[in-house]
Image (tube, rainbow, N blue to C red; front, side, top):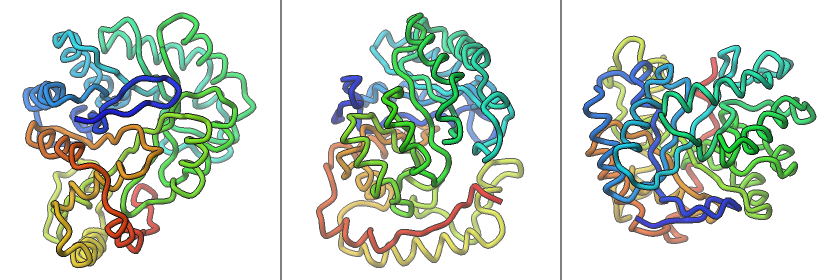
Length: 323
């Protein structure tokens, strides 16, 4: 495992982090807690030292599993979590005031609940789970972040940027009041490279690259015949003719990558790691075999320029999270 600086925090973080949404057990079905715990333990054995979870993942269930493994390991593991929007709307809606989403007291209460779930005294990185640039001048989030740091309950703060909207956090980053941002970045969505990543490098901000495999699209395993359990998140994400669209896009990508070393998921992770602004990539991992495959990508290094040039041709403007 290789390590990088998480911006100005100075923390050395594993290039591959553990995305813990899937182990929450409500929106990603088909797994169980024993598999999740085994995956977390295998990740730490493989050198992963950053786990990203959230209070909303299984109503705290993901946090409880993460906390159990972190506490029993005795290792120095960096835990990132997120305060959910009080109105339970993802992403943040334009025109909806922060008093409905992140009141000052609510941010503090959410953090306290996460600490109880984790069984830890301090959260390394607390993030707002959505962001609306209309809130930039409001004092609620500023006061809450300041108080959480002052009290020692949180070491660093950040935001999880709305789906496919990297530009919405630029003004926030310029305030100097956040230490890291989390953003969708993958072969299909390369938009953070335009403005977000250069600014993060200029201001020495940590970057957590999420959804590197596009919810499974970039594993190459999604076909028109793929079936998801009713109620699972991906049955919504890949609804309608979206599986067909994905299969066609991925087939074209794989044709262009013929002769390039590595399986598609490895190439997708190495794509993210090829950008110097990225501190860590956080693929979702629910089983030990996922951990072993994903962590192996760290040792392979960045992709060569000629491969990156191929991948540039496969940008796909879409938003499967939307209606």
